[in-house]
Image (tube, rainbow, N blue to C red):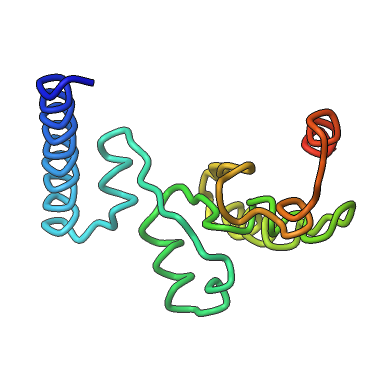
Length: 142
């Protein structure tokens, strides 16, 4: 990519970021002025406001209350990544994801998935395995 193209791309990205901050800032200002939560202010503007959630912190009432009150959608930080879901080959653990989904259902929140196949949080058995391409396809399909 040429210098000018990179510079233009950076300019566009910076402009988009500033526009997002301006929209969020005006929503936050509205929420603060009327004692609304972020969730209510976003809903007033026909939007959702979300947060990445570490499900291991949901047993902390202050954390859980903040997530429940302020956000209309949640995304799992790590419990829906491969390392958490299948820590050993053929053994699946859905408990963390289930906890997050149950929490969201109890608080009328949307749940957004996260990248299952990611460059980190891969299970050791997969990273250290010597699998062929067809074996990896089958493992991924499982």
